[in-house]
Image 1 (cartoon, rainbow, N blue to C red):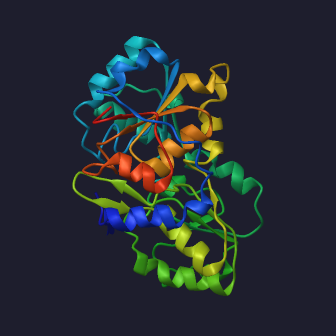
Image 2: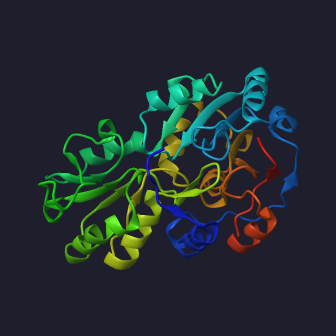
Length: 301
């Protein structure tokens, strides 16, 4: 893992609460049912949408219960989709990483907010897009990686907009001159990864959503978010499964403001696992504070 800036849980949670007005409205509350894991309820569903970080893995390491849960889902014969906010890898690279951990997903089963990026830029204006992202292959035609700015020959003041894809080796101090440029000259901002943070084994990373909300507050530019909890990535993932009623789809995630909110906003059921963002916290207290309630809570998938 490259050098990352880390956030505390309290910083991340405060951000999710402070910026919830930019997210979909919270669905009506439900009373969560505590279960042992997905095997207990898989028979009630025809499709499962899985998050990655905090559910299947903690960065490179696999979550120990994950492969057995994966086998259970496959044996039940339900359709599977992985919907990730990861903006650092191509779908092919995500698939390869999953297979190395024992998850035999097909590329056609994996979706991410960055999958929508090219279609968004086709509707955009002329000029180059300033991009913050780890993998140059994910930066579309017309985009320039600006992680080395200033000093790399690219003038961000001339960019037609900003693409926030991934924050690996990019810190909040690095964002300060970019923020100042957008305060002087507001332009569109597209966010491939709306997460504020992602859970690793013993830390939580800074992610693009945090920078996007900061920019919105200070520069008055409302970002376009492409990943969870927003509808377009779910529509993309479920376009071949539109015949399945939403209430027969289970979304599994570790974060109330992305996985649970995104799924329940679409009329789907949601299982919150305690292996990622919520580890060591009382999920009922968090649900009460946020107004976002999962249908199920489990210690792990």
